[in-house]
Amino acid sequence: MASIKEIQVRMKSIQDTMKITNAMYMISSSKLKKAKKSLEATEPYFYTLQNTMSQILRHIPDVENIYFDQHEGKNPEDKKIGYIVITADKGLVGAYNHNILKLADEQLQNCANPVLFVVGEVGRQYFKRKKIDIQEEFHYTVQNPTLGRARNIAETVMEMYRHGSLDEVYIIYTRMTNFIQAEAEMIKLLPWKRSDFYIKPPIDVPMEELALKPDACTVVNHIAADYFVGFVYGALVESFCSEQNSRMLAMEAAVDNAGEMLRELGIIYNRARQAMITQQITEVISGAKAQKKKKLS
Amino acid sequence: MGTFSLKVLAANRIFFEGRCESLIIPSLDGLVGILANHENMVIAVKEGFIRIKPEDGSEIEALVSIGFFEIMNNRATLLVQTIERPEEIDIARAREAEERAKERLRQKQSLREHYHSQASLSRAMSRLKAASKYR
Image (cartoon, rainbow over all chains, first blue to last red; front, side, top):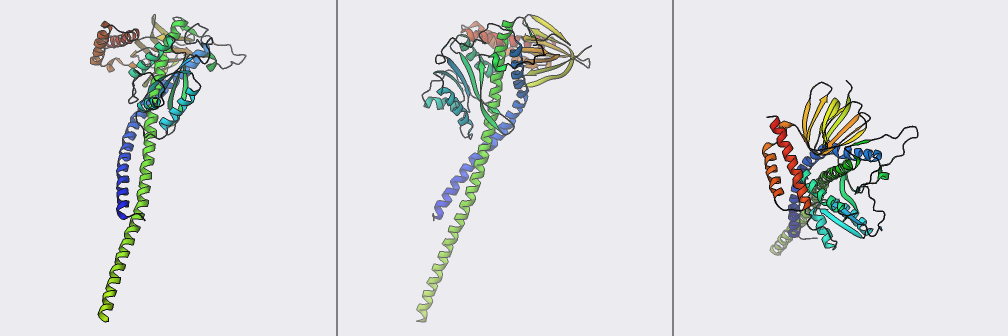
């Protein structure tokens, strides 16, 4: 059995760690409240944006446009594919970072020319360690997502796409599926593919015509930029909320486990203390007995 | 007068949801008025004023940034990045942003930065214009 001193030191260290995890739990739960509020405000926009977009793409007339260009002439191996990967700035978030990076890794294996845009410090460190090149001057944190930041990200990526240094763009982020669960997800942002959205119309319903103002090409260009910014912003908000959520859950579990460990160690400690006392009493009694015998004889 | 259902959504809030009689939005080539049973259409929206006339006869005005508008089968959706009522505009902040954007436009910069500054400038200017009109 471990000595009493050792058990005490161990209990002390667990208590200290518990203080930290408990504090982190409190911080992330208050941040989560804020994040959930902004998520609630953004979600209608985010989902309507996606729905409207698919509706428009279903009805839009055929136009020659860079955003529809599938680059079919190119070899799949030659395609330069951009990935926007949104991770956390810190660890201690349970499986949050792991899920995102796993998804990204899977994609990178099938891709010869990846261009990585990493948001969040954990992802940057991860790819650096694996010696995978990332866009260096792309330094954005994930704390407190704002529209301005989404605009900056979108502008950088869109410009590269327009100049042909990217052929496809994907975004990897974490979406809150409901109020307690989050899921890593990958969405293709560019180029748009009509067949992604196409649903076969019933025979008796005529295909609706959709007029575009001022003209198809201008509208597509305009919407593309707007959609990109909107999507990046939505993804940033969703990710931030998921991050706080999973950190809160991870810290809650850590506090619970620490409490459980403390309880078990407490029992061991008491047993050891009892054993020590019993031993001391036995020693005293046996000493007294020996004295008595000496006197009698 | 006929009505149509309208949803006005910005990136950080739901601005309007309900039936309305008419809507005026700033498109790339001028103001466009929308009435009930409009032809199905998608319109690119730039910075400027929108005017909503809900069923009850009141009138709502607001300032929007870029986005797009879609009407299909008498259901309209306006999706913009930001939307503010005139009284919500922070004049000091808008003026600062205007100064900053002008300053940046004067300096030599890459094409992307140029577009960025131009966009910020037009946002700031439309805010200031709206605010001065209502105070």
